[in-house]
Length: 244
Image (cartoon, rainbow, N blue to C red):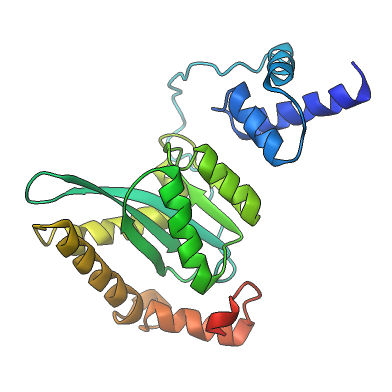
C-alpha cells in the first residue's frame, strides 16, 4: 500500500468511526466534500479491507444513570439545536414543524412546517441572513439531518454537525425542553383549521416566546433582550453586520 492509499485508508477509518451508521457511499460523499478525488469503487475496497461494514444494532444494557455530557455553549451562535415536532390539522392532515434553538440564548431561531434536507438548509440559510451562521448544529439522526443536502450545507458553511446517538434525546436537551413548551403552549392549545392559521399562530407564539415573556433563569428578561445584552458586552464575533 503506497503512501497516498494509506493516507486515504486512514481517513476512511476516521470518518467511519465518527459516523458509525454511514456505509461506504456516505463515506465517499464526505471524502468528496473534503476535496478527495476518488471513485466509490476504490472507497469500497478500502472500506472492506478495513472491515468497516455497518453492523446491525444490538440493544446494550447500560448502567443506570449513564449520560452523554452536553457541553454548555459559550456565546450566541455557538451551537444551534434542531429537531422536528409533529402535529395535525382539524381535517387530519399531518404537519411536520422544524424547530431550531440557539443553545446559549435559548432563543427560537425559527419554526416552520416542511420536510426534506433541501428544505431544512433553505430555512437555515434564511435564518443566518439575520443572525449569522452557528459554529455548530446539533441534531438527531433523522433522514433530513443525514441527507446529502444537509451534509453538503454544513461543509460549505463551515458548520460542525453534532449528531446525537440513536435513542438518546438527552444529548439534545435544549431542543427537547423547547419542544415540550411548544407542544404544551401552542400546538396542544388550539385545533388548527388550515395550514395558514397554523403558520400564523406558530409565528405569533414564537415572537411572544422570544421577545415578550420573561425567563426566570435569565433574570426575568426576554430571550431577545438577553441576547442583545450579551452582544453588547461580548461583541459576538459571529454577529452579522445587519444586526450590529
